[in-house]
Amino acid sequence: MSATIILIIITCVVSFLAFQNRQLQSRLMLYPVVMRSPKEAYRLISAGFVHMDMVHLAFNMISFYFFGRFLEVVIGTEMFVMLYLSGILVANLPTYYKQMNNPNYAALGASGGVAAIIFATIYLTPWQEIRLFFAIPMPALVFAVAYLIYSYVMSKKPEQHIGHDAHFWGSVYGFLFMIVIDQSHGASFLHQLMNPKLSWLN
Image (cartoon, rainbow, N blue to C red; front, side, top):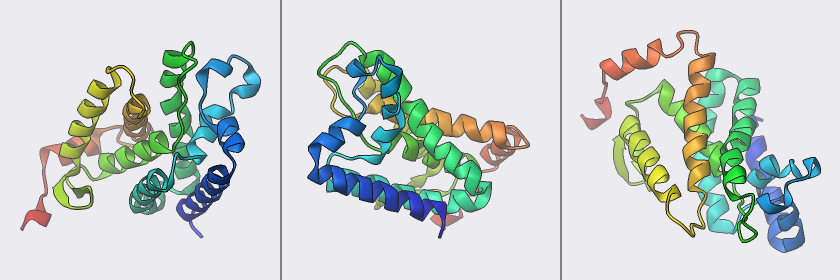
């Protein structure tokens, strides 16, 4: 069984348990104001395994499955798991520092890690077709730029209940992770960038 499937199963089990036990959900979610103690640092990763509701869980896990199954084969299981877990951590850190004095802020969900997986895949195949909302076709690179701009702009608006900071930084981290582990260190991406292949439009 692939790591992609195992991570999906673990996330679904933990999320389902948290749906039934809000105290468990509260203990696992990102809650910056109580995270001054090192004992609470686990929340930076555990928050990626709980979700608000079934729609939130399904959207993240479906996205994770479609991109993760490809990426895991390309970069290997160990590197794939490292990217996903560190992506959750890195994506949550800016939010933690930004909201550490806000008692009204809490966040949960795998979006940061999933964004890292998506953007790592886009690094490998920038001209591949992506279907926005599973319906609207566009090159992966166009989606990536639009997604980053949207996440950045929305993160600057007050009273947001969606982790746009995590989406933005998870995406950036996934892309940078690939530059580091790719032996060409970005040269292969630039080559693809200069030689677009949009065969799916034919």
